Every structure is written in C-alpha cells, then in structure tokens.
Image (cartoon, rainbow, N blue to C red; front, side):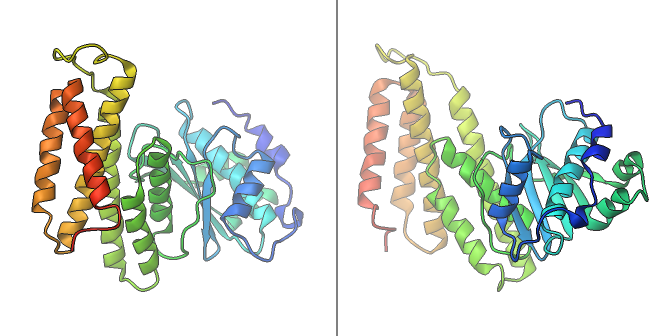
Amino acid sequence: MKVNIALIGVVFVLFSSAGAAADNVDSAKIVYVLRNTKAIKPDMPLNATVVQKEAIVLTARTAKATDKDCKIDAVLISKELFAAFPEQIRRIKILFSIPGTNLASQIEVTAGDVKAFAVGAMDVNALLSSLELTNVDSGSGAATSQASLTIVPGALADKRLMLLSRIEGLRSKGTSVKPFKDIFDRIEGEVTSASSEQLSKDVAYLGEKLSDQENLVKQAASRPVRSGGGGAGASDPKYSSDSARLELRCQEWNFKLDQWRKEGRDVAQLIASIAVTRMLLADRTPESMRKASATLDGLDFLFKNGPPP
C-alpha cells in the first residue's frame, strides 16, 4: 500500500470550519461519514461506536500495509471525523485488525494532534512520529462485518465492539450464534452495573468461547474427508460441507450444555449423547453421518423451547 504523504497536506483544511456539527453522533453517522468521504475503501470492513466523546473505529489492515501506512490512514480517518463532529468527538481510537491473528494495530489520535498539523505547528513527519502504534489483543482474526454494529456506551467499548464483530463474522459463515449473542447481550446489560473486574471476566470468557468456535470453523473447513469404505459421495464437496456443518452443530451443543451445567441443570445424559455423536463424526462415513445428523435433529426438536428443568 503506497501513499503519497503530500496528499495529507492537500486534504487537510482547517477542520474547525469543515462540516456542520450534528446534534448527536452515533455509530451509523460515523460509518456514513467515513464511507462517503472514502477515508476507508468501500471493500474494507467498517464498524464504529462512540463513548464519551471518544470514537472507536474498527476496520482491517491489509497484508501489505506498513505501520506508516496505518498511521496515515488513521490521520485521514480522524481528519474526517473531527471535521464532521467538532464538538462531539475529541479523541479517536482506530483499530486495524490483522488478518489471521488475534491482534489489532491500535492508533489513537486527538483533536489537538490534528489541530497542530492544520495550523502548521508540526509537519507531517512530526505528526506521524507522534502517533503510537501498538498491537493489542483483539481476539479476532478479522473485522468481518460491513454493517454498523451498536454497543452500549461504557467500559471496554473497544473490546465489546470486537466481540460483536466476531459474532457477526461467525454468523456470516453459517454458524448459529444465538448462544454467543445471548452472552453478549447479558454483558451489554451489565455494563453500567457490573464491577470492572466482573465485566473484564465476562468479556474474556466470551472471547475464549468465540476463539473455540472460530478454531473449529477453520478445522472443519480444512479437514479432509476419508471415504472409509463409505461408498459413493464420501469425497464429494457437498459431503465434506455437510460434515463440517455437523461438527459445528456439535460444538454449539457443547457450548449450550456448558451453560446449562453452570446453571445447575442435569445435562449428564445430553453430554454423553454429544460425545457419542462426535464419535460417529470421527468415522466420517455416510452411515455415521446420517446417525449423527439424526441425533442432533432429535436434540434440536426436544429442546427447541428451552433447556431442561
């Protein structure tokens, strides 16, 4: 990604006179501004939120982007938001998730940084040098959702936005995300009442569960299907896809049973049923797949209205 640094000087006007201040600013308005000003390319994911005059923007880092490229992008993004919302936003945190890792490159830009550059108090190199880029644990391989995601204002807003982006990423891959969304909604309901320690613990717990599911999705997509004497169709791409979906359903049931067990419900027999189902899946033959699917269909039917007493 090659960027002409001189362009920053061209696009920078005194942002205090640019754009009309909105009475309120929310994630949808931030996304609208950035999409329409083309500060972020149309094919790049984008999510945002704002908490106490701090905007948090979540997008992805391209494979070829250098740290300097990210800083330039962060400055351009910040310039547009400060121009559009001069009274509502004072600080901006930009997170560039790094594909294939659990890290994101984080850069923070203040209104003072942009003002100093706009009035000539510092040149472009000084501005870029003043910006610190750190790699933070995003718990996400990518920012996958193109839609605007909304979270409750409060503590750990950046981490909660990443969690929601990961949930939407799993949803886009065909995974049932209701168990994860239920936990996320509970966390959102506790933002203003739970202690910082409890909130951090709950966020970390959901992050771990999402990591388990994301790893399973990767494994299911890459695992070869052996015929095992299973007859015609065992090596068919549709057969492999069905196998992956069944494995994901087992993982979802394990997650659900873990939650029910913590609620004090008797799920010993159900845990055993899922264990048997996973053994069937390990055979990876058409017959074992049919049996596994029938077991999961039965469990879905029995507990479609809720958990056991």
